[in-house]
Image 1 (cartoon, helix red, strand yellow):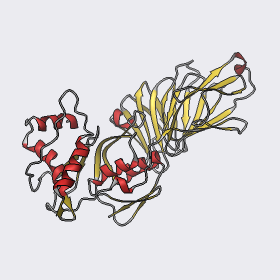
Image 2 (cartoon, one colour):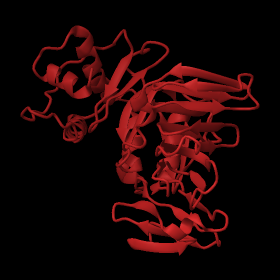
Image 3 (cartoon, one colour):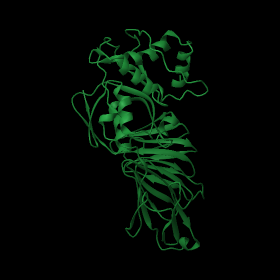
Image 4 (tube, one colour):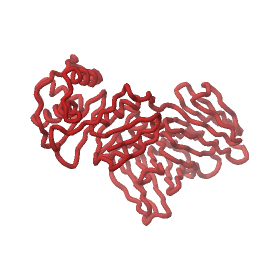
Length: 382
C-alpha cells in the first residue's frame, strides 16, 4: 500500500488493526530516546516537521492528533513517512521492549551536503578536457567533422557532418561523471545514454566500422538507436559484453557491487561472458542477468526499482545497510566507514535523490542506525 493511502485511511479512521500498528509504531519509536520519553514540545515539533513534509493530495491537510500508543507491535514493522518517502523496515526479530534506543541524527549539527547533479568531464581525442557543468551551452568542440554541443537541459549531443564519414579512423572520446554527478550523452548514431554517478563511457565520436562499440565503467542506461542489422551496438565492461541492435537496457557494473547486472526494458539483448560457465544468454524484457564470478544467471526483476536512479529516486527492496550506503556515498560524494558490528537491518522503500544528505541520514536514523558525520566522512556505528 502507498504511504499516502495508508495515512489517509488512518486519518479517516478506516485502518485495520494491522495498519494502525504500522502508523502508530512510528510514534512509539520516536518517543523512545535512551529509555526516556521525549517532552511534549519535542514530540510536537517532530511530528509537525514530518507531517508538514507529507503531501496528501486531494484532501485538506490535517495534522495528526497524539493518542495513546500500543506498547508493542508483534509484527515488528515500522514505517517512517517523510515527504514522498515510504521506507519499510523489517527486523529479524520482534521489538524487544518499548524502551529500545532510537538513534537520531540532528540536521542542525551536520554539514550541509547537497545532492548530486549534472556533472561530468568530457575528454576529447586530443586529450583536451571540458568540464561540462562549468561550460556554457552551445558548441563545445569540433573534431573530424563532428560537432559537439551542450544543450541547456544538460545533454551532450554529437552531430555528424558529411565529412565525418570520410574521416581517417575513429576519434575516441570519453565522458566521466564524478561521485555526485550524472549526465546524458546523445551519440552520433542517435543512441541516448544516461550515466549514473562515478561512471564513465568511452566511445568513438563517429561509428565507421561494422560495429558500434563502447566501453562502460559504473552504471548507465541505454536507449540504442536502430540502424542497419550489420551494425550491432556493443557495450563492454571488464567482465562481459552486451550486444544489441536497438533496445533499452541498464547495466550496473560498479566494481564495489557483488555482481554486474544487466536489465532489459525493451527489445532483446545478448549478454556474453567468456569467463562464465554459461558463456552467453538472451534476455527478455523485465529480466536481469547477474554475473558473479563464473556464474551468469537470469531472473525477473522490478524495472522501476532498477531505473529509480534515472528517475531521481533511491529505491530499495530488502537491501542491507551496505547496499544503501554505497548508493548514498556515490550520489552525495562522501566516504562511508563502519565501526563495530553492523546492525542487521533490511530496507525497502524509496527516497528522492534531490534532498540534502542530512535528511537522508535523518530518515535512516529512525531505524536505529547511528551515524557520526565529520566533513564528508560518514561513520556508521553500533
